[in-house]
Length: 352
Figure 1 (cartoon, rainbow, N blue to C red):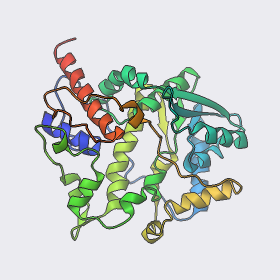
Figure 2: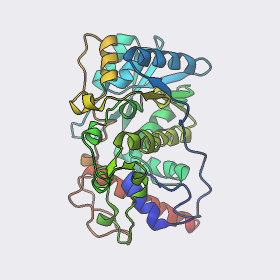
Figure 3: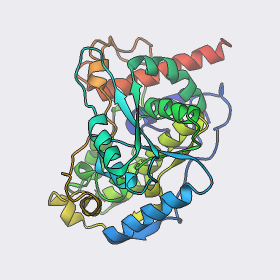
């Protein structure tokens, strides 16, 4: 069913089209393939030693019949995975570059992790021009506008394939499974305030014709309050994981992550709300790297504030004029991505 207003609104709120029966247009083929699913196949993890054993076995099994490289950030999650990669393995780190600006650089910490574990470190530089040139490929493959992480993943996956690898292993999912999204878990939210808190861009601030989608969150409402971890562990996780999968699949690279296959039971919400986010992961990291400090990391940092500092906003008639003013760089990106996708649809429908 084509419902452009629903699809646009859903992407802005949740970075995905929530209803799988709804699409932007008939101009594109049917969905590329069934989304990643892991329900019913996840291993319960209770203690940090179980966590480490699972990761070790997962990496060993993943490398049995394919060449696999590691996507290594500056955080503790991928550093834990690095400990179990065979010596001499290749690790790629994404480094966003803004000429003339100092932005977050994870490659410094990642280089140290590689030195400790005797891994070969390779850096994949990401520029705004990559977003401009690679967006059509990713959007056509996804049949939708895409998450801002996908350009980095796609470019790294292309490089890994060129270097002879068949799989790229990420530490994606640890924040979701082990209670790292502490802002969303910090207190109990009522339905309306959770929708406001979670939505990336509220459609009414951007679109002339819009709908506000609440049913995705309503399914996790009990007694007027939202089961935030249940929502994050299912809906948010699936959306995020499928962004990784889309980018890797477009590059003909297998996406791997041990955290897709785990579930933390039970998650101690009291510890998280006391400031001990991701406590099992922290314990595991300290076990493996007793002399290294724990790091607080922005998930796959992207300098959107710098890249969109001079953006003039969307020009299409679906958008309010100057709707981007006073929005963050990340919010501006999702407006840009939606407009870029709508322009692409127009080109396809015109047969260009």
